[in-house]
Length: 124
Image (tube, rainbow, N blue to C red):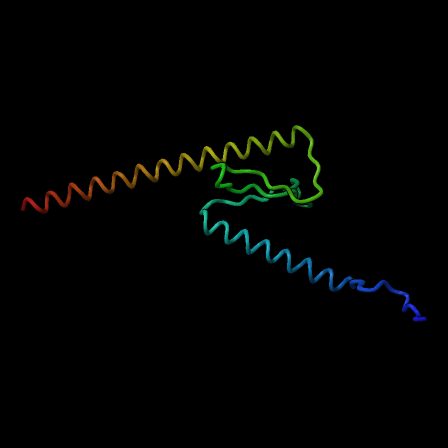
């Protein structure tokens, strides 16, 4: 018969758990950075006013073509808080669409000016 060492088999030390949590946080930050570079959109942290607790992120969700809220696990929200987050998502979506519309208009204007300049150069 074998004697038990007193601990659970495969028990994890607090230092190992901390290292694992830090690695997961770095991975999340890297994913966020990559998401921003790929989409070119903002990523917002949703937290308390004193920034003592972070509840989740608001970021661009391409399939829905709008900003969406991605809550962190084990978070509970009440209706007015959810309403504020929804209003923020809608406001940021409108602003992004407005900026993209302005960028498209500026691009079209630049193309038109380029055509006019090339036509003027061809006439000379």
